[in-house]
Image (cartoon, rainbow, N blue to C red; front, side, top):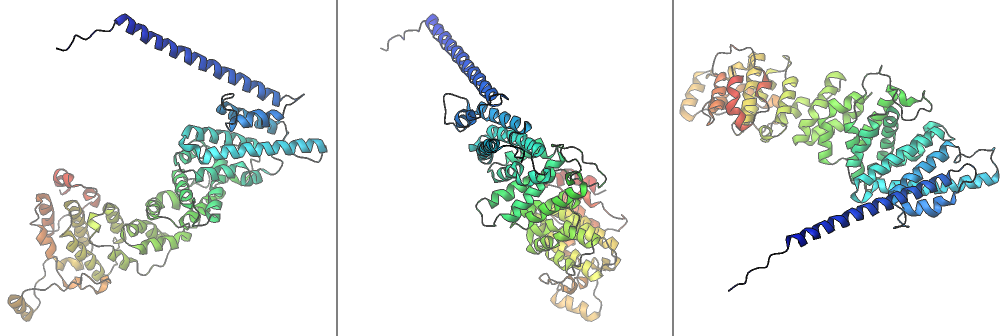
Amino acid sequence: MPGVLKQENPSKKRKGVEGAEKADRVLKKSRKAVANQYAAHIAEVEEAICDPDAPKYNDIATILLPAARKELEGKLDRTQAIVALCAVFCRLFTDGKLSKSNAKSEEQLQVIGWLRAQYEDYRELLLAILSHGSGDLQAQILALSLCMLLVQAEVSYASTSAVSAWKTGLFFKTIEAVLSSPSIRISQQLVERYLQQYDDLRHYALMAIAQLLNSVAADCDWMATLRTNALEIMSTLDVVENTTTKLDSLFCEREEKSKSIQVTAHRKQAQQAWLALVSSGLEKDQRKKILGMMTSKIVPWLQNVELLMDFLTDSYNEGGATSLLALSGLFYLISEKNLDYPEFYTKLYSLLDVNLLHSKHRSRFFRLMNTFMSSTHLPAAMVASFIKRLSRLALAGPPAGIVAAIPWIYNMLKAHPACTFMMHREPRTNEERERIEDTGATDPFKMEEVDPLESNAIESCLWELVTLQDHYHPNVASLAKIISEQFTKRSYNVEDFLDHSYSSVSTSLPFACH
């Protein structure tokens, strides 16, 4: 028989738990004491380096930099050493200890040269953390914050002009490091913490992005990462559209009359950055993202929208969803900038393919096509081709796609009375009537014809819509019957029929039909 298990003494168990808790408290206390000791020692080193009477510059190379590189692990805390170095170099900038001038002696120039070499080593350390970070976002954010503090010191106290300091100093290298980081989150941090807040940072960041996109080879290892981060940054920035807006939020107050606070200069840099991005060999998903934000995020920045003509026409000619997304930008150039695109409607007609009513961009396409086809001066043969082709596609479309197509067809028939006889076509001659009775009717419409003016749709009828009146979905069938009734309704609001799903067709559609 199994024996009786011996119960543990509760008092002993409790003592064991209390002992563990006490050990944890002692450990935390000792760690805090060590941390305070590190902090105190770091503070002493920092003060010794910046002592105006007897500065111990050698401590930078013998204590702080080795600690920051983890070469003195166990003796000093790396994070505190990195922060202390930033404070040291900012104070050296403020005191003019890093600026060369003819008034200084040879010995002083040698010291300045040595200090600048140490500063370069420290900058490279921060940039390495910023660009890689080993997946540690907090370390990258700290490196970004310290870099921006040094940028402020560099620009404010540089011996060269402020513009030169922006273009060739730490700021450019910081943007390069962020763009080369495999983590997109540090790009988001850059935008949220700095570029959205300060106008001068945004101006020179756009300049740096354009320069990097234009200088890095397309087959470079980190070009894909560069494009991804650049797109993330530029698509997040708020548009500065009003030319009368005063941009006075400056990160560095030096040279307030700089071009960085002029709206026209901002827009020029944004234009150069966007043009560099769209010509950098985008991937398909990136191209779609840019086309999707074209009229809202990109066009308002640009001073010469015509420069996007090649990108938009190439995207429009690509076919599929890319063509659908390129429509709005291309039509903007046609209507506002008098772009000559003679085959626009032919290309638009070709987009009416078997995938249209199933596409996730279906609603966007119908909104745009509603605008493109709104003119009453379009040839009746062309309008008939669009109506007929869309009717044919509706036979194999999902219910949500069909309910978007039928109201649009109704509106086209109301706007173009010359096409209404397609609904109730009768045989014109006795010979045609006898032929239909003997051999049956044939549809003269050419579905494969690419030219809408040559499809013979104007000679056809809309038997497809009559067929849809027997659709398995009752609401689709009811909606299709509006074609057979008197056209007493002036037009339908197409927006009421877009963005439907299969379930919403059953619930909200009956209310939209009335």
